[in-house]
Length: 462
Ligand SMILES: Cc1cc2nc3c(=O)[nH]c(=O)nc-3n(C[C@H](O)[C@H](O)[C@H](O)COP(=O)(O)OP(=O)(O)OC[C@H]3O[C@@H](n4cnc5c(N)ncnc54)[C@H](O)[C@@H]3O)c2cc1C
Image (cartoon, rainbow, N blue to C red):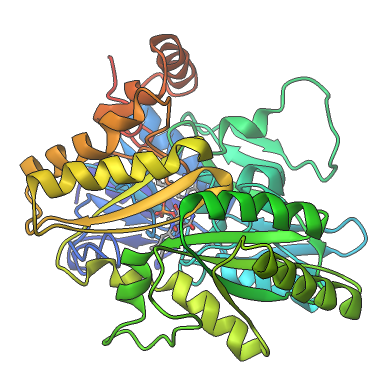
């Protein structure tokens, strides 16, 4: 057996190391079922084991790819046959819930949904939420600075993390398990590991900020005649709800129609006759006050012509059905392989930008399909684009259709998914030369042997 593999086996217990078929029978992603290729998968249970693993690998110039729940959408977990995969799946303990300080301390491998459910047992809420909640891990969410459905109210993963314990490439443990909202004692080092996709360290423990659970969550589905109406309605509803708006999820007709047509089993809350749809959710405390307020606001919006049509959820099952429409992203693949995008740009440019992307696609592939939706209040649009094949030539050509029109309006190639390997060639479209140089400086300082998730975010310059 490879020497490094046998040394890794000594660090973890007998279930802690997978090789051969036990590696290749695992898939790299639920949507891209290709077998994992790696020297081995090491599965520690403690931070001390992670530290020993990384020290050993660093001393031997052995590359390491961290794995969370494998739901990332930019191929940030891709590995070579010579890489060691470090999976956090057995570091899945919720260590403490502090209902007074409203914090939860967890190991990095805990699934997001379990964190949400555990917070609820203390009448609290962990507001980060995304469609992959059942499979993704909090360590992966933090490493990608995940966004999701409630960013407009509670911010991205970064805003919901108070402290982090991470292990550097050489095995040094950086314990910064702060539990306070305020702590300006020098550099805020946890930020080094948030959104850096496992390139600067392996996150092992996290202190999360919890919020009060909402007493009510009124939810509605609205239809619009044009994008201008949507932006006017966003400002109107945000003003009227006075800070209670918690989701504003926009779906273009191309997405809404697919996810409400068989074989999808979603029921349309409003007819599919409109170009745009929005799922609106508010999280409030005083039950009658907020529920009435929500209904009144929507009624007023209809009267003012800010909304073309609307349906308010009358029950929890209505609410869940509306969210299911927004979360039915598995139908991205209705027309065969789809290339997925996650761009951000100023809201004022969105309408023209989306039209321009679709025009370019149809010019090149008249039979292409483009499904569009987004967390537009956060400036974030997702496209799922099917052009009839999944070749790298087509991928590159579709990238051009999506990224080129972003340049003049200073948009970003990634709003919330990160760069991984998928967007490696395009980082310079969203970041200046100096910004990338500083990223490299940090990488070279913290991981001089370039062992941690190599060739992710940017190509190494060693
Ligand atoms: C149906 C669906 C819906 C989604 N919706 C959203 C959404 O709304 N918003 C959004 O932001 N994303 C969304 N995503 C993308 C994905 O779920 C997120 O990127 C998520 O945060 C990834 O978590 P994970 O545990 O699966 O990480 P993985 O995919 O396992 O890893 C992601 C990256 O983080 C690194 N990493 C993982 N764990 C650690 C660790 N402990 N320490 C250091 N590095 C680590 C990996 O090396 C990799 O680079 C969605 C994905 C799917 C499939």
